[in-house]
Image (cartoon, rainbow, N blue to C red; front, side, top):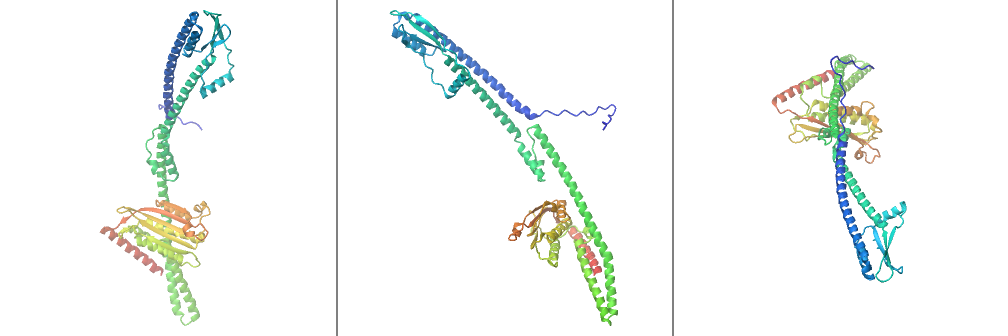
Amino acid sequence: MLPPASTPGVLPDVPAAPAPLELPRLVMRGALVVVLGALLLALLVGLWRAREDMRDELSGALAQAEMSALLIAANTIDDEQLVAAVRALRDAGGSRHLDVRLVDGAGQVRLEPKPEPPASAVLGLLVQLNRVLFAPPRPQTVAAALPRPAGPAWQVQWIASHDSEQRESLVQLVEMMTLLAGCGLLMLGVMHWRVRRSFRALAPLLSAIEQVERQDLGEVRALPAMPIRELDVIAHALRHLAGALEEAEARRRVLGAQVLTLQEDERNHLARELHDELGQHLTALRVDASWLQRRLAHEPELAAVVAGMSEHCSRIQSEVRALLTRLRPLGTAESAQADGGESVERLRALLETLVQAWVQSPGRSTRYTLAFDSAGLGDNDRLPRELVLTVYRISQEALTNVARHAQASEARLSVRITREPGAATALLDWAVEDDGCGLDDAGAWQRGNGLAGVKDRVWSAGGDLEWQPAPASAAGTGRPGLKLHARLPFAVIDNRSSNDNDNVNNGSTSSSSTTAAEQENIS
């Protein structure tokens, strides 16, 4: 595929380079501070150690000078005083890594080297490890004759103390390793604090994503500003996604409502055709049957046939009236345009008629009941016609599903309307519960028009549909049962003004007269 041609005189758009990530810079900035602090601390420790080492070196040199001066003047001191003076200088610890031994003229050791003090556990372990890894150096000794005023000369032996030098080096190593370990732990602590502080904002992000999965976008819209640019970009994307989802869902609701409106229009059209065509023919047929029955009064056999024809026509008219009621439970389209809403009693009557129709249906063993509670509304409050029609249709579909598939012994339809004091909106809780076999799989929501139609109507009305087993109704039957539950919010129509009352009364009269005229024409 060829690239699009560029417009002359216009520079092509160059994609912007992606901005560098901010979180690694923040983490590395904290690590750099720790490293610089560690280097400064190491410099200070090194300077202090150098100062101490120089002090020890000077002290050792002065102690060695004192020892040399003592040995030079040894021929003026008796034996016991000499040994005591040398021991005192040696025990003072001034001489570093160098020990002394005194041997008299008879070969007897008059002063042994000072033993090494016991090492700590860590230092002893390092000493042993050093001896295992590296061969210990050979002892190095320097001997000199020490003249005595009476008797043969003594021998003074200077012994290099490798263990002392090794211990001092290992102590410095332990100090340096401790410093490095402390700096490393401090660096890890700073990085952990920085990352934890940066990712603390992930909690609301993860919660918002979880709410998106549950189709609740309120928490996404309320996301605060993030402390890290990367997280703020994610939050902005989530807010944009929430807006797009809300817009798409609003469009789908409008489309769903239009589809349902088309269905109701088709039902109204079908009801009108049935009334106009079939009603007239049935009326003419009944008139003809009545005329034939009067003319054949003297022929009983033919009169009985005509009476049966008239009875069949009457039964067909009753079925057509029931069918018209199911097709347009709220009356004609003209009355729907004139009416500003439906009363709560109208909804109750429609649902009672629907439940009673299933109760009186022949060959049914299921017991149907209705629970209706409208205490949340006043006498002047009315319901939107769309809501009444939605509740009627989903009740019709749900009870039909119970009759066809549930194999239940009991089904219960319940409607409860609640409203906060002074609120302009109310909430209608709708539920159908049975003790039947329940749902075998989730495919029941995609097959056919029953439960899928209930779900679409509830969703188009701005409500939420939930389904779950109904253990309370199915107790003792050994079957899971099914409970459908929907919450439908709606705006209450207040008809307390006189103009609205007049309009509503006129519309109701027109609707009643039209419906009565249709039924009279059918009958």
